Length: 296
Image (cartoon, rainbow, N blue to C red; front, top):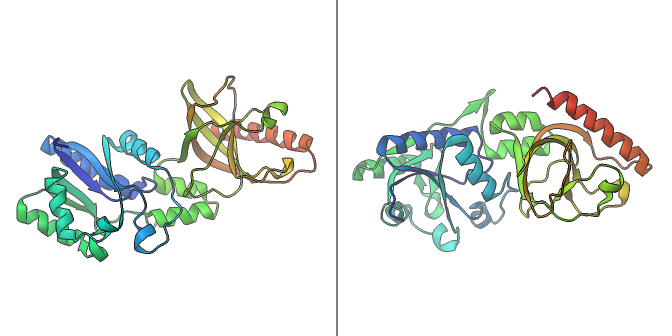
């Protein structure tokens, strides 16, 4: 890797507004230096090794990279394997590697950034080390919204608590899930509501079970959708699935990749007395989605 790159440093789970401030600073510094704006991240959350327990993630590496590019103009994401050797690397050595191995033309981090063995490297030390070798460095202060620090931890809790709309405000974009459509039991077809089924990737935070008003991006366009997250108790389901019924869509999505944007929580998942009652409720949800999201 010989191209000059300015790196924003972090894990960037969710690519929220706090990350957005970092990534914007990275893009601006890269433009100033005639370099490429890039993010340097890790294949797994560092807490998996550091504390032995990683948090459930807000999104996949694929979605993180896509959001960084689409929202903030960061063209590349360099993903390092976070293993024990990297965890135990002294921060001074890692700083040298950023220059010699990854050809960093500049660095950007948040004021609470920690790195290196036992987290001994801090944003202040990174800034000092950069100054000593003439490497541009920007330390971005914490970002606050509605009196609250913007953080992945806080957004995870909002989603667990069912506060989707507030979580989306702190994200700065809808909560998303991208995946490949898999074969389901095709019960939706018998109800007149064929769904695109996604398996929730391992390690991702599941939303509270229920029906959501969504926008779904496909290769052929963008559609409103009623999306059920849960186990489908009315039809004796057991496995967690994400099933999106794309309104006004006709076609086959099996094997194709789609992106689901979660915009509104409509209702909890319910075990109805009959499939007919379920069908009536799904149609009611579709009308609600057209009314609410058609105005967005």
